[in-house]
Image 1: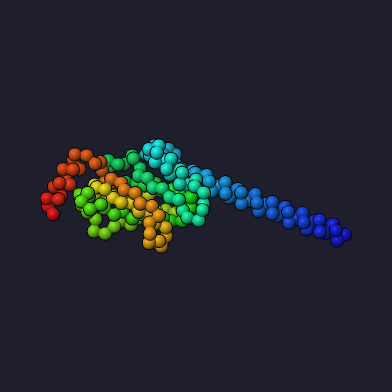
Image 2: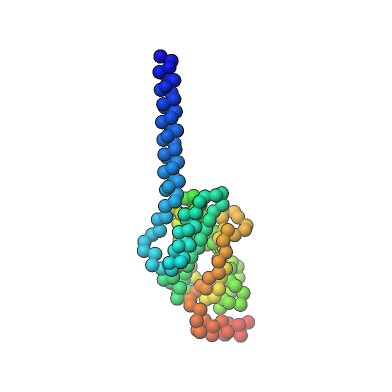
Length: 175
């Protein structure tokens, strides 16, 4: 009788460990999925691949992040951004936009800070944001971090063309 009880106990422990293993494997597979909204026709292929690579990177204790600008609105003063990461769902990243001195028609007084929606399925995006035409350093921070996890430079607020160059020269003359 005692032998049968031990067998049942060992079987229950084995089944429990098996279930836990299956659940953890399922979670790991789920974390590797990348469910971008479709269509993402406002991203270049290389930017899409960069986002996908960050989202599918192994979790090694530090977040892998990528940020991209939506192309569909790059001729407007309003720009939207995509952000992907291998971080767990729910993490909110902070984006800081700092104008590059001498490149922005109407420079900002302070860096603009935008809090994105939480990461869900390794992805989030920003609402359209207004920018004066020029180059900006975009820095991505984890919550309460003081050192950026990622920095990229983008031309925002329009198109870098002859009209932009003319407006920038005029703005510098007014200084």
